[in-house]
Length: 328
Image 1 (cartoon, helix red, strand yellow):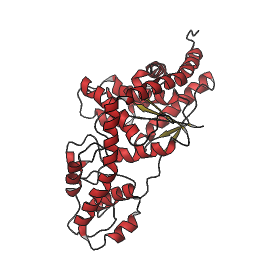
Image 2 (cartoon, rainbow, N blue to C red):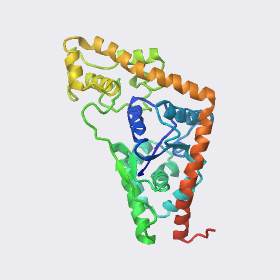
Image 3 (cartoon, rainbow, N blue to C red):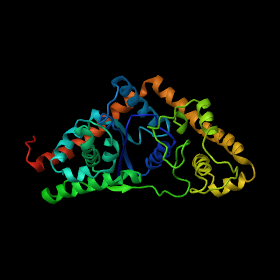
């Protein structure tokens, strides 16, 4: 089976945009050998409260299972529990260039305006490359905003292979087609993507928001003064975003939703959208709390750590042998 690797940082709450991506993870688990990782090492490129981080790591893992990932079909693990990630990252740092790392747009965005920038923030694309290459990964599900990092991963892998032989599998990005109605935007400013970092709690809906909070956020969502249900990303970005969310959760096409709500105004659309979203998220929340209370998630993560280590160790060994380290 072809292998898929993907990681999510345990910082901030998982919002609807993240959730749509994670639902695609579930679809892959019957078709490919999937490894899904809580990339906690990436999260400390920016300051974190240790207790909050520990809690967030376990909660993210529980959410993975709650949305439908089957631990018997996928490998779910915590990045920092597999030491090979850090070891391979150091080796790959020695085959990466300052110039190519300084061109990473996410580094520019995250470092802009900061007086102090850590070397971890600068080199984290190399750690991301190590995450991927460590598992002989064939496909990496990413959005367009991460495509540059996959290109860097491919460049490093090819550079290494050209020098030492075919050591790494060179991965391909698995980029979902972003068609109309497939991108979730901020509820308070629909010209921007929904984001964990937006300080306005009503700009996003997270998977663990209360039903009351979800209702309030949707009912307060920015639209316009026309009260005409129409899908137009330029002129009617707000209502188009609501139609997008509705379509992603209900499975109904956007044209059919436009026809359904013609002449009814935004109030009716928002009220029905509240019902659609809460109907899907409430069972996920219930399962999430059951998983945490049972403590089973720790067994899942231990099992995942063991399998990830089994896959990663021979890959790291052949890399060490290639560069001249002593292995036995």
